[in-house]
Image (cartoon, rainbow, N blue to C red; front, side, top):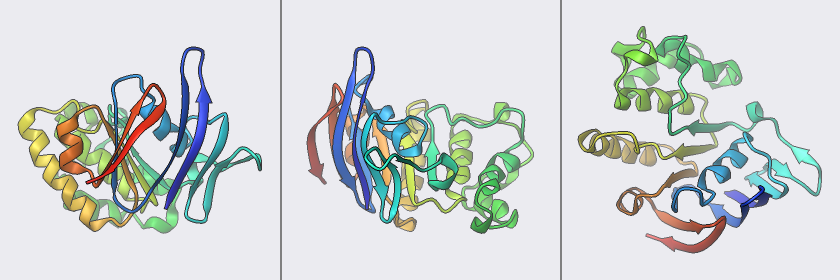
Length: 216
């Protein structure tokens, strides 16, 4: 189980949240600027909370009382950014392969081909990100995040930039991922329909605070 109990203050905004996420899809729903991305960044180690604790089972990612911060590359967190954050100067194969650099035990380069086939991008391995459609970029980003065998998967508005038809195709593929991977998946969105369709649970957030937690 993933435990998040943190606060972080900015000049004109304060995040103060306390919740757990089990091995299901937890959707964090709220408007822009409500603190959704900050939560994911703190879990991944991209941002540092001011106080609190983040832990996944026996792995403590952050504990302010103990002065403990686990480095990003040791957290084994898969993260799909809204922009997908693919490296523009390397091809699809190397983008997917990148995750294995920090987690050699996750597999060899043969895994890249297996994941490419699973995500239906095996014909794209020699292409560069600028040559890909939005849906293709998302598949590459998911493959790169999952190839490390993450303990937690974070998704930041993963469907926001896609057209309606591509969204529906990828919604169905995402539901298959959900069945296969028995890990906490945290997805943030501002789309109520998307949250209801994909989530097992919805946590509503506003102005940095949780206002509702509903199991679906």
